Image 1 (cartoon, rainbow, N blue to C red):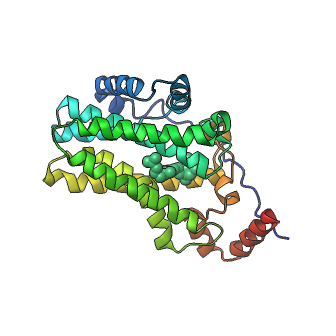
Image 2 (cartoon, rainbow, N blue to C red):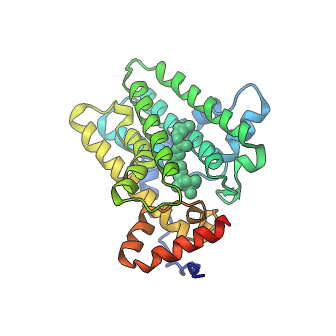
Image 3 (cartoon, protein in one colour):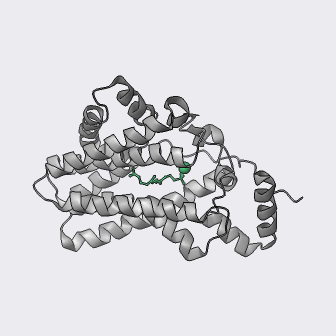
Length: 276
Ligand code: FPP
Ligand code: MG
């Protein structure tokens, strides 16, 4: 049997101290307001709700989507109330999607600690994800412009279709187009929605902002897929090779197989041995 050799984490070059600090600083006040919304909206009447949502939101998320949204909103001149609501919703939907994703992926860890389903069980995580999504819809429904609510519904559907496409391809090598469909659905759709400030950005800016967000989302997912293969678990908080072990042939693996076709049989044998 040929086994895929485990990839050793490479030594990292020292990064400059917080290289994007200036970018974060420019929206700091808004981010603090978003944090307050997240705190107020992520829990619920039961202590378990605060615990499940807090397990993720309190575990060092980067607040990438809200930051992207707030930076774009500044460019587009969106008032504080709606831009903060849309930014908070982008993080709430992200949290909901991770709660569901860790159930789908049967993930043992997330952000360096046991995943929420391992701590609270699948049922609580699915239901908490549903609650976060419902709270998000309520917040958006209170805005004077229906655009963010309508566009979020489309975005969440794209995310679900992306995840379903990935599930339907499990254990098979997808085409490049299929790999991109998965990534554009499950990850890039929410980046695009955030960058277009939930479609509150006016038409001349909306298209370019959404395109920028979509491409950033694709790049982000490719980096995440690479970290699955060769990241340092101490930094990623996830085990190496989890995607492959779950039968997910990601875009970097697809490209590696095209460059080195002998990898295909190695991976196929590895997956077969794993299923026995
Ligand atoms: C992580 O991907 C998961 C996503 C980017 C999106 C998951 C989307 C859904 C579950 C459908 C939408 C659901 C809701 C509630 C909005 P990954 O598994 O590649 O990354 P990981 O290594 O961080 O788990
Ligand atoms: Mg996952």
